[in-house]
Each structure stands twice: as structure tokens, then as C-alpha cells.
Length: 428
Image (cartoon, rainbow, N blue to C red; front, side):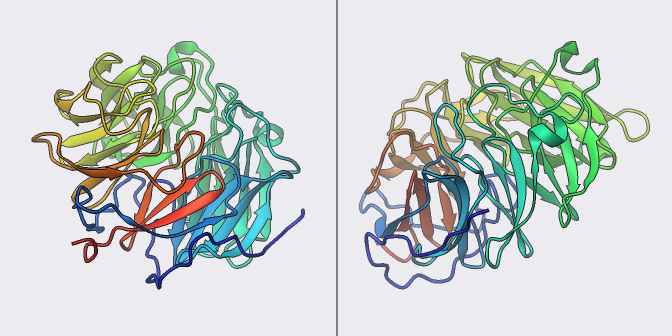
């Protein structure tokens, strides 16, 4: 395969930026969407975050970014392929870029989706046309790559492109091809050799066929059994980590168009939501015999009460915060134990469209589809807006999730990457 390198065009010269910390995968180290150690300044209403630099060269796409040891990774399309790219997180200068497809995949809303997963000396990526690849962090060289269709007869629920970010768990990497005999697969992360595949039992998902959705896998130990929890084309599923046995499934939150948000695991509970009118549910996982688990619905919230189209959800203690509504990001706080709406629901935020959210130590960033970024206090008492701003560049749909590392806010906008200063010692 073709490989290329070179520097991205720098639109604004960077001031000195301290080496970045780690946000090594989709939604951060714990896949919970919260940078818990990041304390940022919260007086945006007095002074907006300062743009440090903006570069191009990320390619076409909606993928967010991963950051490890001062290097930022993402995926994008150019005119010839879909590629993974690594840049210096302090200034956006390109380190390497590696094509992963022979041509740009064709689907609605063209472009990449996958946020790379960084582990050791490897980077793991899925392509939107359905493959998983392992790359060298040093130079981007492809070490191994496998096709969902050829290996596992993979299927996606609709034509918007595979969007999953691979999960690395100890010596393995997991992904969701969506095949009836291989809904989820677990591979040796070094060689790509299959460890197990999880076939879909006939009694799962109310006996209906399923496929891959647009979500990413998280780990649960609910009911005392280690398992992988995923939102698929027909609903939520728990798969035993040891052997790939499907332990339980739940269909009520699924819709027939696109099941997108990553579920939230809380001890023996799973909170899951989708859009398109479907709603949300809290499931309680309990032990059932030896190494088996049952999932019981604690409550269900219909779409009129709460639904998360896409953009995700974050948890602080007993509360979950998210954008509510289909193609809306109405700021909302839900008491996850009861399903009661603490505030919001139909509260219109500062921007329009769905909201991609990321949490910091005390605040939540809502990045709306129209590009507006709002800072909201992570408190269940009331909706507290601490300011908002419109980034330097905006085009199409601003769906890429914001990332905050070492006081710097990274915003991917199609081909461009922006870095803003949000450190607590500035803007006072």
C-alpha cells in the first residue's frame, strides 16, 4: 500500500505548548468521556478560549482524536484513500500518514469515523468500509489488517459506514463486524489471529437478526462476570470475555435507523440510549448460575422523555449529562438510578443540532452540530452556562467529539484541526 508523509499547512503559528498528556482512545482512557484530572478555566463568558493554532491535513471525516505521549492520532479521507495520520500535538505538524483503503469508501456522509486506539507501540483503527488494522506507532506501517466482510461476513445496520473504535483489552483487540456468526470478534493484538468470535443465539434480540451498529465496546464486570457490552443494530448485548458467549441482550432502546451512543457501565448497571425516537434504559446485571448473567430492565425512558441521537453521555456520580432529542442537543441531566430528569429535557442550548460532549473535572463541553462550543457546569442543581464560542473554522456537521488534554482543547473539523488554550491560568 501507498504511504505518504509531510507537514500539514499551519494556518497560525503556535506558541510553545507543553507536551500533551494521554487521551489514548475513543472517549478517553476509561471510555467514559471524562477527563477527570483536567481543571480548565471556566470564565468563557468573559473571555473565549484562545486559538493557538489551526492546521489542515486531517482529511475528510468525523473522527475524533486520540493523544498519547505528545502525539495526536486520527483518521480521514483524501481523494485516493482513507488513512490514519499522526501529528505533533504541540503544533499539528504531521509525523506520518498511512492509507488503509484502496480508494475512499463510499457511503452517506462521506469521510472517516474511527478514533484510533493507542496501545504500547501499536495504533488500532477500523475503516468505514469495514476492516480493522494494526499500525506501528513509530512510522505508521501496517502490521496486519483484516476485512470484516471477507473474514466474518460482516454487516452494518445502515449505509453510513462502520464507526467503531477498537477496544484493546490486555493482550487482545476487539471489534464488531456484525456477522450472524461473528457479531463481535476478539483478536490477538500482536498478530491479528482470532481468539474467538461471538455468534448470535437464535433467542437473542427477540429472535431477530442483528448487525453492527455505530457504537463502541465497553467493559463490564456486572453480575461478577467480565463481559464486553456493545450497542448493536438490534439493541444492547453482553458477551462473556473469556469465550465470546452471548450472555444477555436487550432490544427496547434500539431503533431501525442508527444505534450510536456508547453505553455507560456503572458497577452492576448499564445505561444505554439511542435516538430516532427510541429512548433510554437502565439495566441491572445479576449473576445467573456459573459465569452467566441476566439483564433486568430497571426502567425505560421513552423518546419523548430522553433520547441521545449521537454525541454521547457522561456520568458524574449519580447523574448523567447529555444532549437530549433526535438531531437536538438539549442540555439534560438525568438521575441515573431513577431516570428522573434533574434539569433540562427541552432546554435549548447555545447551539443547534446534536451535541458531542466531553467532561472535565468540573465542567462539560457541549459541541453542537453548528460548531458552537458551550461550557456547562457538571452540577445536578440547575443548568449553569459558563460561556460559549464559535470556533475559527466550521463546515458541514461538527460531529467530532472535543478532546481536552493538558489545558488544550482539540477540535477536529473535517480536514482541519484546531487547538485552543483552556488552561486555568489564562483568561483571568
